[in-house]
Structures are given as structure tokens and as C-alpha cells.
Length: 361
Image 1 (spheres, helix red, strand yellow):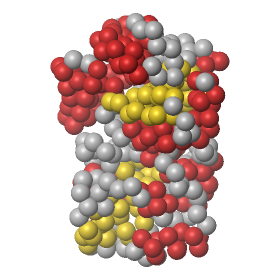
Image 2: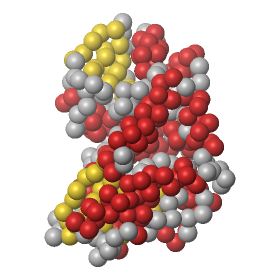
Image 3: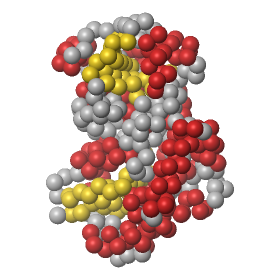
Image 4: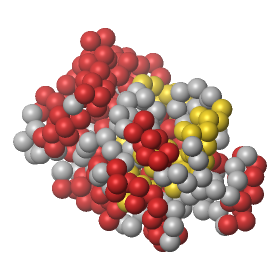
């Protein structure tokens, strides 16, 4: 049996979900092992990188935005790009010698750098592949160690070329997402809502991320409640806690769950911080997007891309958010849904997996 390693980051769930979607798409001939790439770093650095990220998002998001902009420049200090690779390369090289994988797939740029640095220290020979999970590509995704880089959009490909990646290594393939997401006809959506216990009132999915660090979560719920419009608001974080009535709003605390694609497919809109994977899944389901207080840096880049494509609205003030919600639940919703669906590349995980197997063998 052929061996493969899938490296992801513990910061955010998009990296992990995309990694698992790809691993599941490989043929049965492959043995798959899932790894958090930060486990190969010293304990201090395992705490430092996620800790600084979460601290900045909670208390000083503008600093995170400034950091992202600074490191997206050609004169970025080399130590910021190479420190993770050098530190963990020895430990990862030992694993490579033991496992002898034919394929290493990373859904975070630093992991592809780690795999490349470890490969240079070992006798292992494998395809080092990187999957970019955003609509645009920051300089940290431009990893020369990667043999093959998959991106979601032509814009991301152009970003990587501008950052110095060889164009022949880059494949525009879409975002690997969970199976089961597709645009539903009206009768299909009505039947799905009935199965999920939802009625004919508008259904809104709140995107607040998997880390629990979304600062604007409570503010968003308060604004939805003040709309004084009957609706079902679906929340996927923490533990499931049933349904709570808040004025005209029915708040469904659903927790993390495997059938999230069903609930998203049943929705009229997806509202919140909107990570890259959530955005890709909303496009697959033809669900319009309202971005509210995205994480500075990558999510703001995603938001600009989605707004330019007509798939999203990005209000900046509470009164603008109320207007945007009214628009997306009204006449603008259908047009935005079609625009969102045009961004979707079906079966991305299967197509990427097929190319990986072909190149790795």
C-alpha cells in the first residue's frame, strides 16, 4: 500500500477540513496519515505561533492586518519564512525515513516548507504538494519547496506568479470541500428544510469560525434579533444546546456536526466572518454571503474577491449590515446566489486527488 502524509495547521478549521476532503478522495490504494505540522516544532514555538495569532485577533486585529501586509512584501525578512522549516526539519526527516511516503500534501504554506526542508535532509523521495485554501494567495503560500501547488482561482495563481512561483507548478483546481454540497431547486430545499425541522421563514447560517475567537459573534446575533423578522439562525460552535427564541428569531445552537453541508444547503444566506472554506462551500450550495467583521488579512482579501464577483456584500457598520441582510433576503438574493455558484468548481477534491496520484506514482 502506498503511504501519504497530510499536514495541516491547528489555527482555524479550514486547513483541516480541506485536508480531510482530499485524503478521502484518494483511492483505496493509499494509506493516509493526518498530522498537525506544528507538533514537529519545539514546545515554545508550538505555543508561540497560535498564541500570538489568537492574541492579536482578540485584542489587536489591526496589528495582525499590519503584519500580513508587511510580510506580503518582497523585502520581508527571510527568518519569518524559514524559521518554521529549519526548526522542525530534523524531526520531520526522521518520520520521513520511517514512513517513506510517496505523497505529502499540505494545506498551509509553512507545512510545505517543512516537508521540503526535511526532504533535503533525508533519502525520502515524494511529491510535495501544497493546496491554497484562499481565493487570493499571500506571499507565505509561495513555497519554492512545493513541487505542485493547487489554487482555487486564477487570481490566486496570478498572486503566486507575482510572488515568484514558477507558473508551470500551479494548477487552478478549486477548493477541496466536504461532499454533499450543491445548489438545490426550490422544492428540494423545501423538502430538506422539512427534514431538518425548519419552516418557510428565512434561514441564516452564522459563520463564526472553529476557534471561538470571533469578536463580533454576539454583536451579529444582536443585530439579527433587532431586525424583528421571523427567521431561523443556525450556529455551529461549541456544544449543541437546542433552540432558543429571541424575539422573532429562533436561535439554533447546533454545535460542530458532520451534517453541516445539509444545513448550509438549506439556508438563504451565510453571514459572519466567512473563512475561506465556508465561502467555498456557500458558493457550492449557491448561498449568498454577507461578510461581517472578517479576520484582518486573508478573510478581508477573500471578502474583496467575493464582493467583486457579486457573490457577497460587505457592510462595515451595523445600519449597513441591517440593509445588507434585507437585500440578500429580498430581490438581490437570487442574483447573488447565481454569482456565488459561478465561482464553484465542482469535484475539486476528486480532481486534485487524481492528479496527485498520477504525479506521485
